Image (cartoon, rainbow, N blue to C red; front, side, top):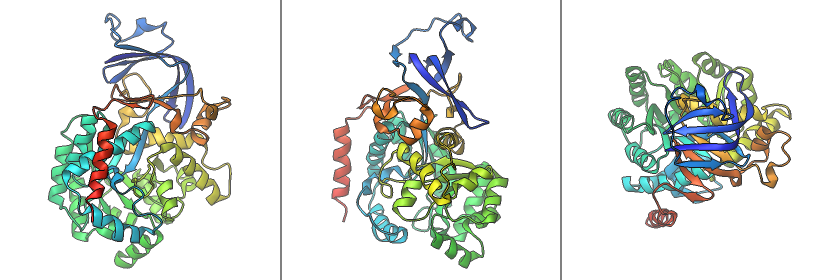
Length: 433
């Protein structure tokens, strides 16, 4: 589909300097890619200048802001099942007493419907791709592909189910399901996974030259018990097993020591912070300021809807900077520009989606339109800071993934009736014991 966005303000990203510039003009989408950005007067310089484009739609942005979609870099989408089901509990009790018993009752078809519910929520928050860890990865991928949404997955392999053989099968199947679906090696966490499994995962990372991601140093207890078992932190243990030869990173990364920071810096790993979940579970505040000072890559994620419970990148952005300021007692730390970079380009890079990290000609058309003509975005002293500090889901007017508009003005264009999805989700939770 060819779409011309006109009368737009366009957020351009300086990847090297983690900064942004806003220009006025037009953005053209041809198929699933950005074809042109400019004022509309220099189209003679286009690569296919002799080609006459037929516009299926000319979208008047009315001076609102086109920007790269948010990349939700840590999710468990089908945990929509447990939204507001087991709250106000510490992590270990929440996980072992409430979450795992219900998850054990899930079947493959459940994942499909629960994923679609999560995708709908992502779209309302301007999220154009997510980095998911959950059961039945091929079914997860099918839900995303059927909706037209972009999902990267990693494995949640642990002692409670699965094997390295199944992980390898999922890796190959999901990576072969089209451009909206990809898979990166990983496992749930050190505290749920045997040494035998971890060694097998390291071999698969080497075999496929894949990065590796896991839950890492989310709680102080997790790190303490890992040191008691192995004499090393989770970061040091997985590094010693050779898991980061081709990069990767960790989710949460709250309780890190000096050696952990050194490994992340030297290996070029990504610390994916999840401030909403860490706050609700009282896990701690990630040392974002130190990550930035040491040049360690950052990405931002919501975590799952059972621990958050809201899949809202605006709330995560505010918490990322707000909690860091409180931790350091420094209002100047973690500026809005770094937060917005982590929520867009940083997440894209962690997920190996470098063709989705910014609005540039030739990049994938994963684009959102932010409605600036609302009270919370006025006056326009600084639009980037408005997005981070005062923006909300109400400002997301349109979400496009891979050249298709999937959400616009509170309407979904994913091929499913929202009422059907809500009914399916309630039926699934209704049968749980």
